[in-house]
Image (tube, rainbow, N blue to C red; front, side, top):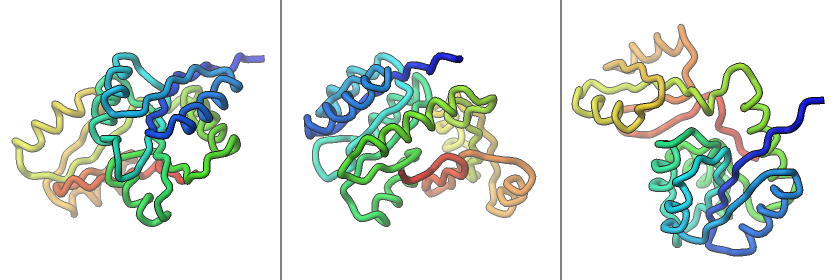
Length: 194
């Protein structure tokens, strides 16, 4: 029987109890988890790579965009929002920041272990959308394309100048992320709510 991979997990939530709860679920399942209660603390911990990052989505204390940008310069972890918002708003937030899923509070063991199992499944399959995402960028400005290429340097990027050309490319090929000139992100293959 194949041994289950050990995941590296970061929990970023201003409530210490949330970090303790997810950490205890992770450790009971054989994974390593660390938690942070602020953006500054989380950014320091991102000197190492993580398989999953749970991020609090609320009005106080956590700069999600900065954490995701920093994390994705090292690797491409599964990003899960922890939200107490209404589902429609949380879903919109997930799409805008490029998260892979949402867990609505209150948190329970089943919701968390579903995320662990999905990440393990992604790590052991032959195609890893979280490891090798293919991005289609609709943008005609060469400066913006250049800057996006710098930021997204370890991802496969295809660009097109118009929406019509993009639709043709989408019809012919699979893309994990579509980025438009207005910087709204829509993930096709791995955005799911838990």
